[in-house]
Amino acid sequence: MRAQNEIIDRRCPLPIEDYGIIGDCTTAALVGRDGSIDWLCWPRFDSPACFAALLGDTRHGRWSIGPKGAYEASRRYCGTTATLETTFRTAAGSVALIDFMPVGGPASSVVRIIEGRAGAVPMQMLMTLRFDYGSSVPWVTKLDEANALTAIAGPNLAVLRSPIALHGENLSTVGDFTVKAKERMGFCLSFGPSHLPPPAPFDIESALQATTHFWNSWASRCTYGGPHRDAVLRSLLTLKMLSYSETGGIVAAPTTSLPEFIGGKRNWDYRYCWVRDATLSLMALMGAGYFEEAKAWCNWLQRAVAGSPEALQIMYGLSGERRLTELSLPWLPGYYKSLPVRIGNAASSQLQLDVWGELMDALHIARESGLARLESAWALQIVLLEHLEKIWARRDAGIWETRGVKKHFTFSKVMAWVAFDRSIRDAEKFGLSAPLDRWRSVRAKIHSSVCQNGYKEHLGFFTQSYEDDELDASLLLIPIVGFLPIHDPRVKKTIQAIESNLLRQSFVARYRTELVDDGLPPGEGAFLPCSFWLVDAYLLQDEQAKAKALFERLLNARNDLGLLSEEYDWRNCRLLGNFPQAFSHFSLIQTALTLYRHMPAAKLVAARAECHQLESLPDRV
Image (tube, rainbow, N blue to C red; front, side, top):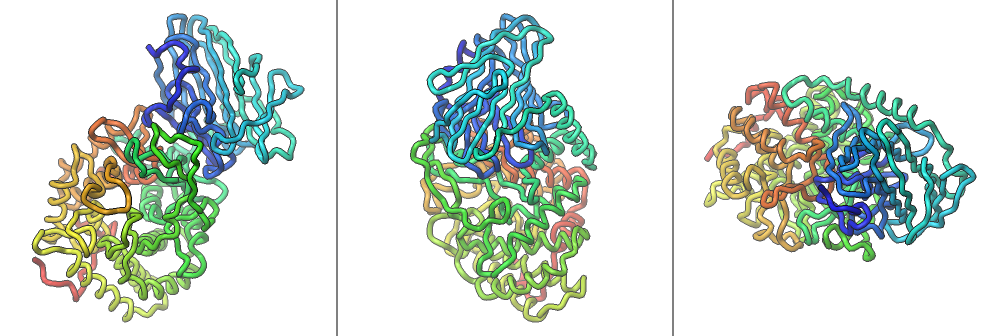
């Protein structure tokens, strides 16, 4: 059992895998296995946090409800919902903590219901509200309602309604109570702007019923019926929680600065929307029957990228904001002293050529599926390609958003090829006006450049950049996007080299950080989407058994709630990086859809890229 009074005494965050997520499609909270909410940004995913103990300790904001004595805990999501149930078993009995965020309510709220299951269990509630990422102590006052408090700091207001008496203690709000079998009591914390009256109370049980109905109805639309359906559906539900209902954008993760290496500096803010996610997200959502969400995401994408081609970014804010200024928060000690803690993301201003390919691929998929009327997007595509024609030969920061010297990254050039390839095929199929001869010429030039400079004869594989001899897991996508067929000897040798050099106990590292100067100290976990790409590569090679075995091992990396972070520490068997990570869940879904359709390799290529054999292809080696 956990130690007595741990709810009060815990001075550091839990392991990443010990958290679960609840959300209302505008923001999300991370709930620990011990019943502590250690992270919540209000009113949006990218707003300042009011609970930031995830990146510090109790002083920076958390909301704990749990037994006062020693306990054992287990948890689960309630069926196909986003409602999290944590069961505490103690010597005195057992209680359940039911956490959810009502969807579509008049104010964003967190509801916590305590339900007695057996005996009589002494409990304690501890709330430490700290607005602006743990830096602002609010002014707390009582409302006329019984056991209701408001907390105000600057523009922020939160109102707590409690079924028990509360009192202040060390700038926190606490309350002791006992829960008996069959008793049920609810706490509710709601957010609002401080210049308006506090959000009105609502019936908690009715909100739970409505929220349960919402999530069950949404889950019932899933058309995937293959093996591991529970894993796919939980990933889909997680992605829905990461969607911003007002605009259709999907955040990469609800957190910032969870490290890719404990104690390291690879700590980034992922509370934004990446264009890079567009293709994979559309395929995953549509493949599982969620065309409405796919259309909303596609519409967000078109709005966000509209404008001057020189201003195309790799990521945007939830509503398409472009200024994502990166700052450090020195008062937060970081997750297990992993500094700095960052908000904003300077990578938003980087040149990353692959984003053109991902954007054009997403629009291509949307046209192929009849997802939306994209006539207006075509004019924008032409302008974007005119700009890409001028810049594709430049050095860039690459898919991994390196902060070192810019290079001619091989994958960046491959995706520049994809941008022209998909646009050419759209023009040909849909009769769209385009300078096809010029585009075909540029496509051939890029292809030739990659094959001549990205492939190293003396090594026998494609390298991360033209300038070096290092491997990169992004090269697994060469056959998947259709740049070269899977049976090409160069592709086969590259996959084999990645297996030999980047595979870490079933997990694929992006590249060897100790050998590549990316502007940061070496050390990180294995980037989980790369491992799913290897499964996809095995499928292209028609190695079904090998693909299924690796996929099963990757499923075991999820936590007990079915959630994945950005990376995995294969040495210590723990999750790393921002959590939960949309890219990891998109990859899981798409690989599952592909794996269990039992598609022949040729069909998989056709579905993903329809690899064209260009006349300009060099002789096979």
